[in-house]
Length: 162
Image (tube, rainbow, N blue to C red; front, side, top):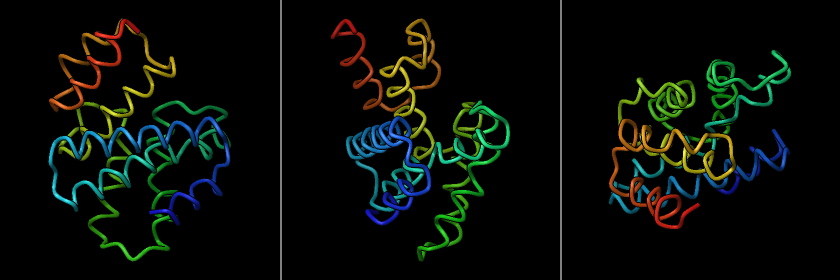
């Protein structure tokens, strides 16, 4: 995992992006652990979290922005190239790339690994001011499904008054 993190840092050395991905990675691992997921699912979840925004750099280069649809379009190919250096089963690479290619498309959530990445990304985006606080009740009701994700959301934003 450490070598992949270094590869990601080398690929896009933007400090804000690095901070964001490390936060999403941390929350994803925390939620996955609190949900008592098996080791393989935790591994896929954490890899997808690390790489979920990997399309930002190429999106900015190609389109001049990092809109969600551009990230989803460009991210899987970049991730596939980075992951090719590691001996991962093809089905794992495909799963990770699917999550990256849909991580802003909540209607595409089809598994606990994907769900946890979305929950962690939302928590971090909310903390970083990229999501409106007005969206919290709707997201909690319609998107958050894990008890752990809901708990973290409540502790950080409802009970703390943030």
